[in-house]
Image (cartoon, rainbow, N blue to C red; front, side, top):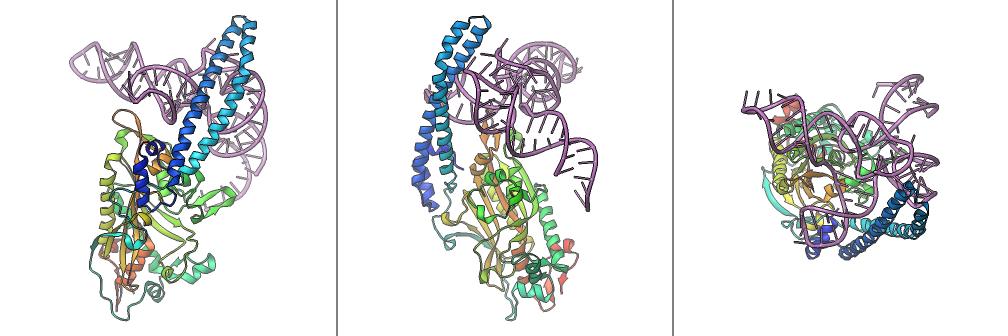
Length: 423
RNA sequence: GGAGAGGUGUCUGAGUGGUCGAAAGAGCACGCCUGGAAAGUGUGUAUACGCCAAAAGUGUAUCGAGGGUUCGAAUCCCUCCCUCUCCGCCA
């Protein structure tokens, strides 16, 4: 959520930035400014009335105590008017605040100055490519066939017990999951992130804090009886650990990592591109989250990007880094890098990580602040990234490393899998 | 799920209608004291929104949340949420 005071003071810039994100309702900006103006006026009036009636109440108390009942009664006569006025103004103020809030949550985060204009994923900017694209023999198989061939993943069994998009991992397929999770967590800890293990369901306040609600309501599984949401990413519970928190300056940066399953309804996604592990309703992911000083957040974003890349390098996967264009960016992000690995059998890039700086967009909702050098509270910047999401990593590992003898496990992973070949 | 107790500031905890944004203690910050520290001692120590160019200052709101009674609510009433204890169930 953008800060009203910022919008008020930087109207032109806000409009210009929103245009980069291809935002369709620029008129909201002026509506917000107008509502805020009214809101402030109304509060001013209400404060004045409250001030008067507070003073009167105090006076009455004083008079009562000193036994001047008549004078007290005389003042009482005025209070009815203030009370009525105060009530009306209070209702107006509440209505204005609600309306302002409703408009405010519709405004996406402002993109950073380095974000390229554009609408479609084709307009994302390729920042770099790394690693060599493997040449596979003509009889190379896509991962879903490899998974069946080596008895690693049973998609049909998942359909039976739950539904499409909930695969059952078996044998070395299951062990590969655990190995990757442990590898990713260990690497994150080496990079200074401390591990947290968090609830997989969150309340609505948490969903709002990180921006999933009200925007992406339909993408989350909702447990109606208890009004809880299954997390779409560890970002939600981990970042919300710091909701309503004022950190001391020296507590920054906060660096957390955590593994969780992620649940996504992915309503409306069907077709060839979602075969196998390409798009699931439940998958495992290790997430890295940082809460940092605003001056540092863009350096930290580069660090996080580098960390994710180091994982891909250690796994020997060819990858590229994209700087997302305005139109392809998420609602809450100011700058996002996507990491994609090359799926050799499918002959296409698969997104395996997304690293974003949210600046104060989340912290404003979360009320996540720190005490700055002047001792004042200030909104912190939040960032997060996948490091990494498992399914597409598994897909590319299986596809790219397939040989006549079986699938070669990357060296860095062998200490975790305790086997070198899937055969 | 049943019964009971309770939600006050960073923490402990007092406060049952006005002098309460809130005692006291602890913690923390700064100062004095000290060769240095401890002890002692003094001062300060919530957040948000508004007014003000801004600092200073000042107004308003906030004692789990929302509503009500009242000139006036942390305190009385109603609804909801949450926590704890005991019992039941249980990985």
